[in-house]
View 1 (spheres, rainbow, N blue to C red):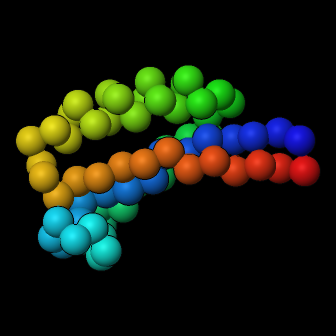
View 2 (cartoon, rainbow, N blue to C red; view 1 turned 180 degrees about the vertical axis):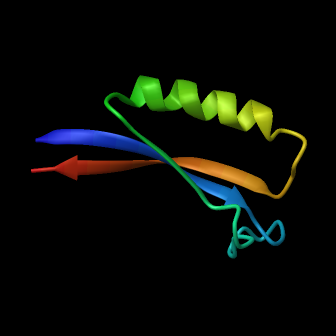
View 3 (cartoon, one colour; view 1 turned 90 degrees about the vertical axis):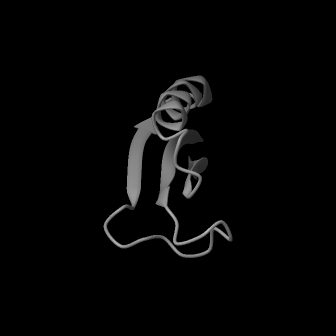
Length: 64
């Protein structure tokens, strides 16, 4: 098995975080290790720190 890691998210309509604002969706990756994805996520999170509607997460994809 092989695992890939992706950063997904964007700017949400409100702090309920259930609806992305059109055009702000982001998908970054794939990253080969969780550590690499976490490093990239930290940079993105720092860059969007002042926007309380921005949220990003790391998604894991396992390939068989």
